Image (tube, rainbow, N blue to C red; front, side, top):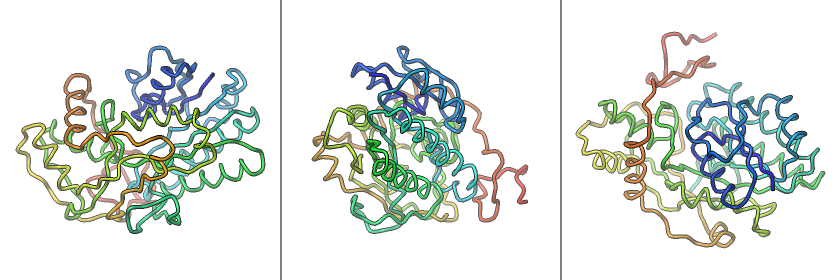
Length: 336
């Protein structure tokens, strides 16, 4: 079995690639290293540096390697920022995905596994089920839902098998803590390590369910071996929500930190989001969930031993400065 894992140098992608190797796959990783790290890449995988937006590169890889499976995890998953980088979001997350889908159709791969997001549901009452009508309210969620629709159309017309997995707030070892725009647990840990206050948009009472990486990566990799998963859309992750305030306190306790919490003006975001896991449990089997306190402790332990603190960079070429949170802005950014 020959497998392409996009985003395989990133957090989730590297764990999925490792699990695919354990299942006996021959793994090729495509990653532009924008958010990934060479240290994350499994030694037995073949690494190609490049982007899914490079149509010629994607085409050449499919011709050379004749993939059986494609695990598409490459994306820039900054929901809040996506309002302000619309062109980048759609080019990177949507057009890049279309390049992969086109080649998957041409080369008749066995299955296309797509990491979607519960961002496609938008602001609707939780728990969100797969039958909840999608109403994404940010460009990131819109791009994810568009890809879901495209995969369904490709299946209908060309018979391309797919598995759509709607992930949410995955955390754990190897997570990037050098990104100021996404992954709240990673952002909080980095702020503690920098001796800065933990910054929370709004009052911190917004809730999310946080999914530890272990079971997530294993289920994603093994999904191609489960016939019931084919051509299905599946929520995958935890269904136990926590407030952002609680997450901040757990992390402060884990690091024995006394840094204060700084509350910033609220931003435009979904207030409460967690997903129903009945379909996932039925297809993959119910697994023992890693409790948030244990998961944060495991992630913190890995960071203390392995993580390299790099300079936190501002996102270059912000397209819309209007209503951009001040903490995300840089003096070089100018509207127009």
